[in-house]
Length: 216
Image (cartoon, rainbow, N blue to C red; front, side, top):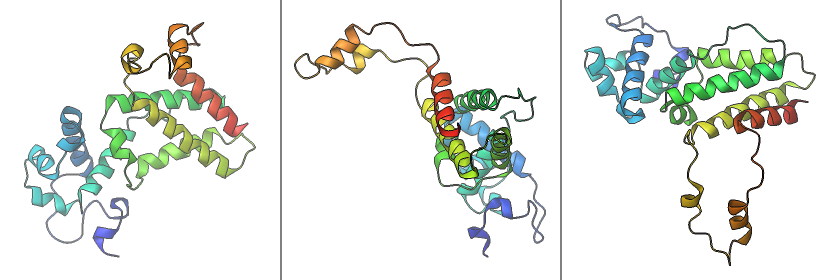
């Protein structure tokens, strides 16, 4: 199979031909992440990463086949910041809710991670650890593997949805300024007489409700 069509995870870190690489994949990923943290995903170009490493852009192709390889390295390195080795509470739901909270914090710490992870990339070893943790946590549940894998996908999707939204709530008056009493009476009534406030932490309530619905 040609090198350009194989996942970076299926290729050796150091090739058997040519000069030995001067930088590890971890060093390349760290340089790219620093650029993306400072200037967004578009700042992590092959040329910019090479500059951070003090080498020529062409030399990166001794390690990577394309920028997709670079993004795969970045996503997997970021997932390595997700703690998965802490003690289990013994309650699958509590552990998955806690994982979702840590994942949301990770996305907000690295805003570039969401678009990088949503592209059609390839899963690396840290992503495998994430799936393994989720399935191990759900092991006591009697539902089938397909339902558990579906739950992992839905959990990640919900975290991504919240990560894509601003952390602070927007001003409803500004968002719904186009509403009129004639065309949108129910909407305006909801805005002007909202009733008792809902329970706090929509994220926590939604994650719990969805996981219970899918797995119990």
